[in-house]
Amino acid sequence: MSVMDVLRQATRPQHEKLHEVVSLDEMTQDRDSYAEMLRRYLAAVQPSEAEARSYLAKLPSEIGLDWNERLQKSDWLTADLSELGGSVSADFSSCGGDQTVVASDGLEELGNPELLGRFLGTVYVMEGMTLGADRMVGVIAERLSVSSDSGARFFSGYGRENATMWKQFRAWGAEQDVDVDLAAETAREIFGRFERCLSGRTRTGECA
Image (cartoon, rainbow, N blue to C red; front, side, top):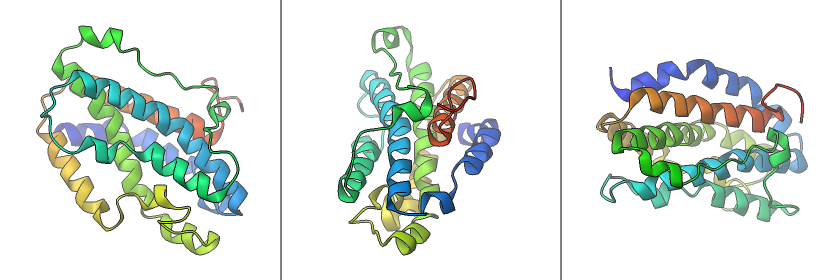
C-alpha cells in the first residue's frame, strides 16, 4: 500500500467530518456569508501554508513539483476577499485563535523522512481540498455571480488542470521516502484545524 493510500485511509473520518461542516447552502446565502466562510478558510490555510514552507525550506531543493505554484492558496483567498470588499483578514477567532506555526528551530532535529512526512501530511490536506473545491465552484458562481477572475479564485483552484495537478501530486507522494506515521498524524492535525476553523469551534468543541 502506497503512502497516499495510507493517508486516505488514516484520514477518512476527518475527511467525512469536514464534509459535514461545510454547508454550500449556508455559504451561498449571500455574499456576506460567502466572505465570512472565505475568512474562515484563510484562518486554516494561512498557518498551514506557513508550516509547509517551513518544512520545505529544510528539504533538498530538488524534491520535485513546483511548490511555489501550489502554496499560494492564501493569496487566492485574499484576492477573493479583496474583490468582494470588506475585511481581507483571516478570522482566527472562528477556530479558537489557532494560528500556530511550527517553529523552524525544532525542525533542525528532524531527518528528511520526518520532514517529508510533516510536509506531505500538510500538503495532502490542502491539495485534496483544492480538488474538492472544484466540485463546488459551479454552484458558488451561479448563486453569487462570481468567477475564477472575480471572487471565486480559491474555489477554482488550478482550473482545468485540477485533476492533472492532483494526479501529479499523488504520483510524487507515492515516490517519497517518508515517515508514514508522521505524515498521517500531521494530516489528521491539519484536518482538525480546518474543522475547527470552518465550524467556528475551539479545540474543546465549544463555539468560539
